[in-house]
Amino acid sequence: MDLESTVAQHYARESLEHTILAALAVMGKDVEHLAPEDLAPVDEFHIGGRAATRDLADAMRLAPGMALLDIGCGLGGAARFFAGERGCRVTGLDLTEDYVRCATALARRVGLGGQTAFHQGSALDLPFAEASFDAATLLHVGMNIADKARLFAEARRVLRPSGVFGLYDVMREGEGDLAFPVPWAEGAATSFVEGADTYRRLLEAAGFAVEAVRSRRAFAIAFFQRMRVAAADAGGPSPLGLHLLMGETAPLKARAMIGNLEAGLIAPTEIIARAV
Ligand SMILES: C[S@@+](CC[C@H](N)C(=O)[O-])C[C@H]1O[C@@H](n2cnc3c(N)ncnc32)[C@H](O)[C@@H]1O
Image (cartoon, rainbow, N blue to C red; front, side):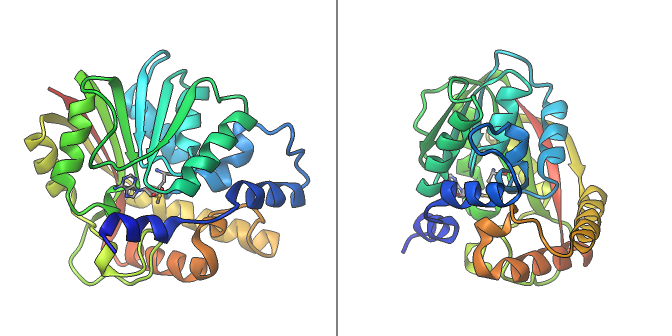
């Protein structure tokens, strides 16, 4: 099986919309009248959830009317935030068919179907014409992509000159073997975590000027501490959470990722780059 098929299979989950609505119902939500915020515990599949998405949008200075491409959009939580809270016209693209289907259904449910569109496809072969977008985002996707030179070349191709590219990936901070499984990979064969310096070099080679690089290590550690306290106070995890996406090995994946973070091996890192 090729890399992209293996990655898509890693994330694939049938009946996701149904699973999410069932969890919301258990929590007492009226599933016929959902707000985008109700979905945030499950539709932001990256460290720091909605807060991290808001920080990235602020750093990118997203503005109403911008055409934005969210590469590797997952269930579309960030895409709906950029549309609903920042007024962007958002296109989401993801390898995993189940996610694309669910992203489309959830956007309709929260009244954002008109400002968002979701497509299945590869980040390495974007099905869009050159200079189609004012902005592009990549949240926790690069760890699944070996060929980052091609990823960034594709992002540059579809952006207009001066377009902004906001990245928020897990990046390498220290030497040493990573513990697996992690949320993005069962093992080292499908994990391509690189340092911010490598990202910078490859972004510049693809035609970007890197404007800012920010390790979010302290933010991530504080986020996981808050989650631990919340779960202890509630007597266990909420029915709605990322465990619905990570399957039975969710606790193992979370533990290994937090261990790698606390050991100083990795940290989520934000990069703002501008198409030149
Ligand atoms: C950890 S999830 C993050 C999803 C979303 N960006 C978010 O933050 O909620 C990683 C996503 O990247 C997608 N992905 C991985 N490799 C990809 C590729 N080559 N092209 C498009 N999407 C890809 C996966 O299908 C998955 O939805």
